Image 1 (spheres, rainbow, N blue to C red):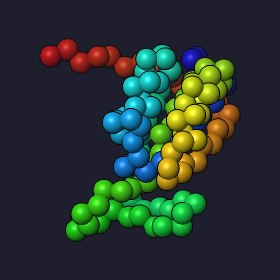
Image 2 (cartoon, rainbow, N blue to C red):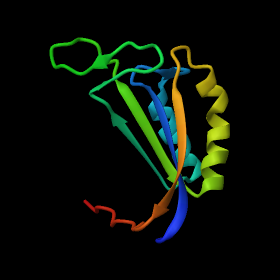
Image 3 (tube, rainbow, N blue to C red):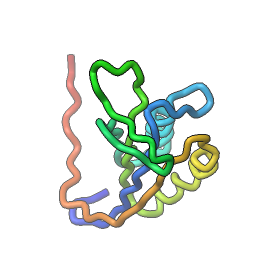
Length: 119
């Protein structure tokens, strides 16, 4: 990706407890995206939300459950993101508790690599 270029932002809305095989789904997606060489992925955990089931999940320190909304954001060139999504489609469609996937065109204003820490 380059500065002042077009890209695609893919958002996948799932639950923090969703699994793929024996892995946490969002971790599996991040590792697969890294293997595919996508520019960037961020996972954000929500503090309150609901989806098509209309069940509200929230984070409160006294609650035992960790079932919270999670958003996986993936960004790169449109063709790369769409190809990656196609590799995930079957997995996401088979999720027993559902999910939501959106995509939007974005403008990259700045894409700058940082320095790696040396210990």
